[in-house]
Image (cartoon, one colour):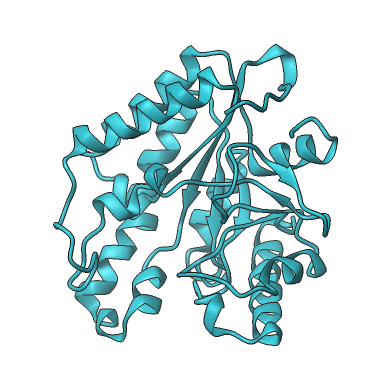
Length: 270
């Protein structure tokens, strides 16, 4: 990467710790076969157990994260989401029911964004500033709809290493699949199609740490994505701990999505 940017307080690079609290709804939107008590329980582990392990690690390392939450999760697991907000973490939007936005009309997308944002605002008292696509892809209208519905930033695309301001006024904070735990570590019947069941933990962590080093060396923005149901179990939390520990040892600005978006809007990011 040849582009450089300036980060606050003389930091060499930036990082965002994202946590996706989609509970059972990621499975229910993936396929109807997951609408059983056994399959639902895979997702329910996140808010019931995994999220507390992640919250404890974040507190230990003094990191404020951005939690992407569907509106229906804010309604069903209200005490959990309240606890996350009270700990000082950002609550951002992940649709209402973890919908496939690519299958929705523009009007249906607007309703899903509005309904999800309303649910979060009712619970936390603050309207979400950011959005991450739930299941699958989007349509060409989606990003414009987010801006029209009052969102400040999106965290769904893959087209840069730095946050940037789109012509429509929405800030994009790009992500990367290799820095997302779910494709490596989740397994349930038909997912992942054609893939092995579970990746080797050390290999996954190695990928995450190599990306962290490269992002820091080039002055980029490292966006790591954790899912409580996937990486929040006791045997996997060492990966979260190791990433947080490495972030804390380097000259990295660890920011929420809203903070990164504000920084990009000021013109500090290329």
